[in-house]
Image 1: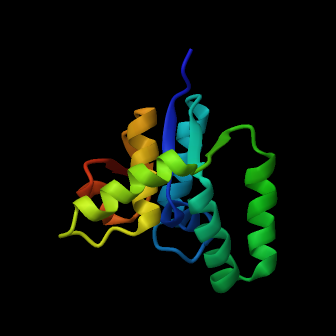
Image 2: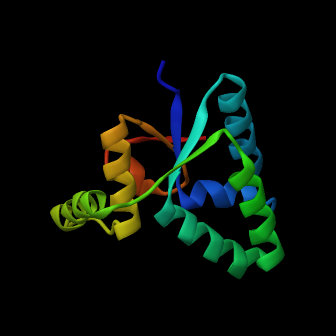
Length: 137
């Protein structure tokens, strides 16, 4: 049986972690409903890197540590690692879409989403929609 997965981008983790974010409540409701329906949250080590850094800068090191403790102990969060093959797929995305301002991390996320057949991401990053994915909330 395959798990129902939604990708969580840095913007999505930030929406859920930062109560001052205008999309905070909507993101929390979406996440909670997704998990109640038996879904899992999928992300990558590159997104993890961005999220921890951004949490530290915006909310402080204690908030970053609390977030890490929560997601690290969760059985409902799956971390995918960007190896050489996935980095190469991300590189191809990065240089193919010259008219877009995709970050390299976005492109590695797109590669993982395509590989794992995940169509939706929790994010406010319009780049996911531009790349052909659905975004929530």
